[in-house]
Image 1 (cartoon, chains in turn red, cyan):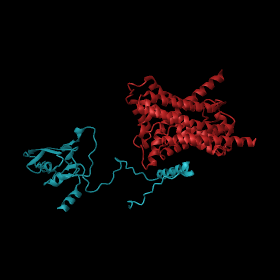
Image 2 (cartoon, helix red, strand yellow):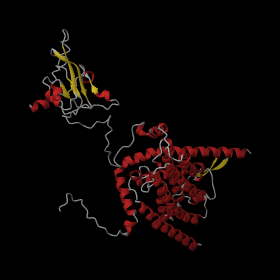
Image 3 (spheres, one colour):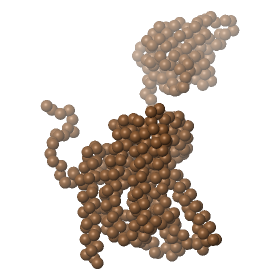
Image 4 (cartoon, chains in turn purple, blue):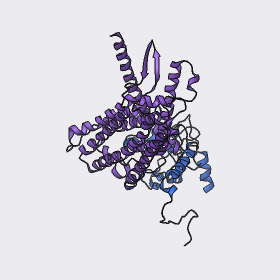
Length: 342
Length: 179
């Protein structure tokens, strides 16, 4: 009984911590994005609210809360409210199975720095991410606005197309590891034994698909300010709009955590065996994981402020005619190599 | 036809090569270009703290000058109002009473003197027209405001402070040079 209570407390604390950290990082990603954009364009970016403008996200959040919350008269009201809720919920859900660090022993209790080690973790992530598009679809459709509908339709077809390539590139990893659990996949990449060295093509396919799944430039056809005046969230205002934008940044954070875990060893780092104390080793591992995540977040932003948006037919062409065949070939090649080595 | 610049490129509708088709080399090139800008000096001027250098003959907010004894130079002759192409200047004249010699330089003075800063086009014709060297345009900027009525500047904002004179020597030199 006593063990169970400690277990519950630790897990609840972990849930709260990850929840808080995710929200905090997503908040500051908006600031980070504006700063990166500014620096890439020879500007300074926000620097008025607090030193270096670090209070800017708080000011933005305050603004979002106090704006008028407008619901269009002819919209499907309940669905209109449900849309951003689903987007936010699914975005936050995926953080639960990422292994944020190796096993740590604290107060005589061994626990994983991971909320839930599901044995089909990867399937869970793919499933939850594909539910995420429902938020956009329902929100866009319920707005009763043709631009929103266009954005929603584009988002859903884009997500379906790129999920395939994403799933196929993950299958190659699963074949190599022999497990669907993210914990096992990360644990196998001990030291410098990272998957990216065995799956470079898979990594590139996954990276491109992740960009498309996050609805970020150059694949931001669902939002598309210049054509669809905001796309699926045209009719949204106040914190509902905030939820959509926020969910996008959380998705980006989780995608980067996934890329780091699947291809760049997660919390593993070279020469990690030289650190004798397992607790210290674990803490350094967590720091390393966050370093990797921030590198990929920067890469995502860097790409966004470099490339122009794809045309819609180019997007479909890239997804169906290039990435899926490539991912299939990658999967076959991986299978052949595994068979040959047996 | 001769091109205007040497940067013009002939457009060719050719089939894309393999390296162009997979986008990646072009993407990497683009990333390199943007990263080179990351470390460049920012073009931003952080305005209230940092001010762009102005030319000496910049025409900004007006000042009504006082003479060396601190008396107002303006005699409310109205030539500035006549010269003003935007009709931004209005004034009410009054006669100087006994004992006000230290306040006003001549027998007549402007009781009110108002410039509508929303109408003003900062052309400097008032300065040209003034026979008493009373009005000058300074290098100060007219600040923004939330209310239109606050843009009508009266004597409280225009007349220079006795103890903190506005330096307009460069403009006077310019005016004298023009003569």
